[in-house]
Length: 198
Ligand SMILES: Nc1ncnc2c1ncn2[C@@H]1O[C@H](COP(=O)(O)OS(=O)(=O)O)[C@@H](OP(=O)(O)O)[C@H]1O
Ligand SMILES: Nc1ncnc2c1ncn2[C@@H]1O[C@H](COP(=O)(O)OP(=O)(O)O)[C@@H](O)[C@H]1O
Image (tube, rainbow, N blue to C red):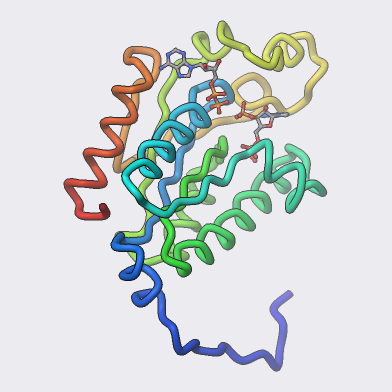
């Protein structure tokens, strides 16, 4: 339900002020892909690289957010939609604070990813598709979740019993089963440099 009787406040210190003091262009790097595709690994490595370059970042990670802000949500379609909606709003606030935000969520539905894209300015959303075949993710299975899902112990598991819609037009497409993590990181950093974010 939309609240009534609330008025938007403009602040004296603007997004432009906050980002220019940090010498960077704020943006959301939205990593999407199957469980085990490599989202967290790559996002962490990109954040480390940016940190070493003196950039101001924040990484929002699936498992962590589900321990706090979104601990009331499960994995039904409805809950995943709400999960991504809230994360989108948080990411938007961080962009407003002038940060380079990295997010690592499966975010299986194109419509929800597009909704986040539409929350911010055009150049403030970069969709990064971590494209790793299901068979490879299942072989990696670092948390043993695919094994449990195949055994019917986890319902609605992405790729097994719940859908994943690959991005139609991602700004960055990473084939994570074919290259080393460092190469994936370079690809993202190059994109940020080329488009003058950093
Ligand atoms: N049913 C089901 N389907 C998919 N994933 C599951 C499920 N149950 C638990 N997990 C664990 O939760 C992590 C995914 O959470 P996300 O918030 O990224 O999911 S989503 O964007 O809302 O679809 C995911 O983490 P990653 O492996 O890092 O992607 C899993 O560890
Ligand atoms: N390029 C890669 N080559 C080989 N293994 C990788 C690569 N990227 C990630 N991994 C491994 O895949 C597993 C899942 O990675 P993770 O980042 O946790 O995925 P996600 O966050 O998408 O669930 C981890 O064990 C990680 O070490």
